Length: 309
Image (cartoon, rainbow, N blue to C red; front, side):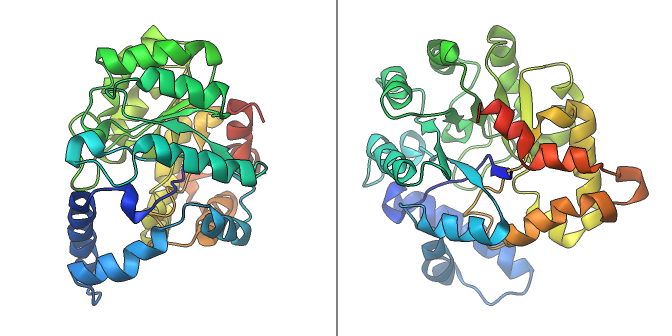
C-alpha cells in the first residue's frame, strides 16, 4: 500500500490576490533561471489553474497513474498574514470533508486552521468529532510561533484524540513567512505532548541537518519527504543520500512518503516520483543503499500504522 501523507486541495478563491501574485513572482524566478519562456502573468494563467481542484478528482487521477492508494489532504490558512480570501477557512474545510466523504477509501482528511483564530479549538474538535478528521495540519509560515500559547493550547485540546499533527518546516514560499519554520520551534510541543506524534514536513528543506540532528532523540517526531522531487530529478545519487540521512537519523519507521501535490506537479509526475523511490533498492549509490523493507515502510507501512488504517 502506498500512502501520500501530504497533499492540498486548492482553489483560486481560497487565497488572497497578494498570495497569488507573490507566489507567481517566485515561480517566475525559478523557471526563468532554467530558460523557460514564462512571465509572471503566464504563471498565473497557465500554471496555477492546473492546481485548482476542490473535489479531489484531479488528484485521484494522478494517484491512479502513480499507484498511490490513499492520500492525506488538507488546506493552507494564510488569511491572518496576507489577507482573507473570498472563501473563509471554515468553509474550505467543509468542502474538503465533503470530498473525503465522496472518496472515503482514497482521501484522508486533516483539519486545518490558524490556531490564532477565535474559536480554533472548538472548530478543530468539530472537525474530528463530527466530520471525521484523522489529523491536524499546522502551517507556521502563516506567521505564528508553534511554541506560543495558541498552538500549544490547541495541541493540548486534541491530545486525547491520539491523532497525528503534520506541520510545515523549512523556508516557505513568498509571500508567506519562514520565521517560525525552523524545526527547533517544535521542541516544546514534542516534549510537552509526548503522546502526540508530530510530522515535520519536507524534511525541513534547508534545516534538514538540524532536523536530523535531534530527530532520533524525539520518539514522537516523524518527517516526510515531499518536495524532494527536484533533487530526485536533478541529482538522483544525492536524492538517495538525503533520504538515507533521514532514515538513519529517525529510524526507518519514522520517515513517510509525501508529494505536496499539486504544488509539485511542475517538477516531476507523481508516477515518476514513486518510481524513483522504489528504485532506491537497486539504483542508490553504494553509500546510500536501501532494503526493500525500508522502501515499503517509507511508501506506506509507516503511514498506515500512524493513521491506524
